[in-house]
Amino acid sequence: MKKIFVIDTNVILHDPTAILRFEDNEIVLPIAVIEELDRFKKQPEMTGRNAREVARTLDQLRQQGNLTTGVSLSNGGTLRVALSDRDTLKTLPLELSGDVADNAILAVGMQSKQNCQCPVVVVSKDTNLRIKADALGLHAEDYETDKVDVNELYTGSTEVLVSPEQIAEFFQAGSVTLEQEFLPNQDITLVDSLNPSHTALGMAEGSSSKIIPLIALPKLGVSRIQPRNREQRFALNLLLQDSIKLVTLVGKAGTGKTLLAIAAGLQKVADEKLYNRLLISRPVVPMGKDIGYLPGDINEKLTPWMQPLYDNFDLIFRTQDVSEKPGHWRRGHEELIEMGILQIEPLTYIRGRTIPQQFLIIDEAQNLTPHEVKTIITRAGEGTKIVLTGDPDQIDNPYVDAASNGLTYVVERFKNEPIAGHITLFKGERSSLAERAALLL
Image (cartoon, rainbow, N blue to C red; front, side):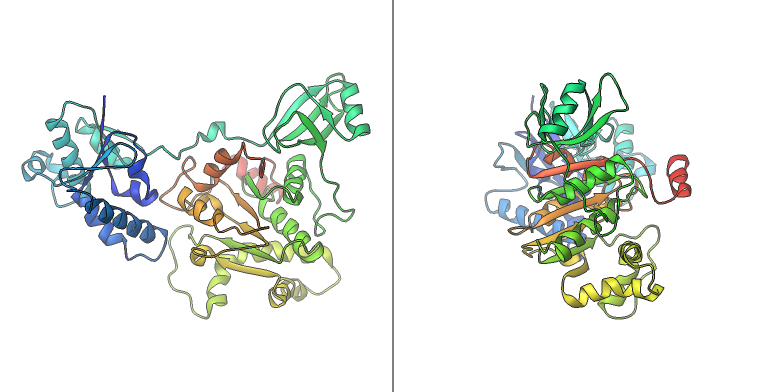
């Protein structure tokens, strides 16, 4: 049986293509949603761009037919713009009275339920609206097309029990073929079945059953940064593999995601000269209340937002030369910027760009929507490698959550792709205090 889906504004702001995600069912957009799109369209960020994209799509559909009676969609469904019936609005409880967009959306849902025998579903990413819809007897759901089960999120690594002979073959021949198959570039810990303390670290070659050793690290480490645990070793292997063009690093605070990515980027750009530039960016999303406009030029405005990145450069350059004065550590990344091999900028200006032959790091990617992540990855030109880092438990963007953010979305969508690699880091290495805080608080 076909269904009627009444769509809230936040759904199409989250995913401008949402109207094509409901198969051959009927999509109903309350007129209040169109009014809210008009209010959001002037915003300069992704929300405003999504609002304008939806408006353009509706304008194109308007030329194909009457939106009030319904227009056919390319996926076999129909789209209709519905007006709120004043009589239905009057039937809402006293607590829901007033000229509020949410009330108009609920009224359209009730109208649709009264006029049709088929199931009616109100789709919204607003928890409170779903609760109010349920209180009115309307079936309500979250928009879950791009949602990921965070409890079942792919970790990127696994342990396999093998015989002592297989481990010996792995070390002697440089590879071993097992009976089971693995996901592309999955990190493998081979455990001796007779002696569990005897292990070997490897990676699945492509999507085959062949396990190959990890890349040997320089004696002094990667940009003088040494891995402190097994997951960090796996992460550096993925970051240094030239055949892997997309790497996702997920982990709680203090696991070393950003530091490892920057260290590998410096190694590839400054030492090996495999890429022309190290480009680092992060979404400008405040934690808590925003302090407002910042004075100065673009670099001075960006300093508070990019300070976490500068901290990692301080640590790297301090490790390289502890004999210099503290001021030299700060000059390290500034000299790289002056040389043109390092660029740090916000994500605001990335749309429309083509980024070839660069090592691109997107920090705090958990604050991005799936649509924003798609926009970023599709900027990659020939020879570019993209690294996404983030913690799904530290989301400051009100429009996404742990299950619907762009980082976890990419992890699940790319886990079967030979050009992608992923690892989840579990152990915090920032300090013993930070580790205990991450576990206890």
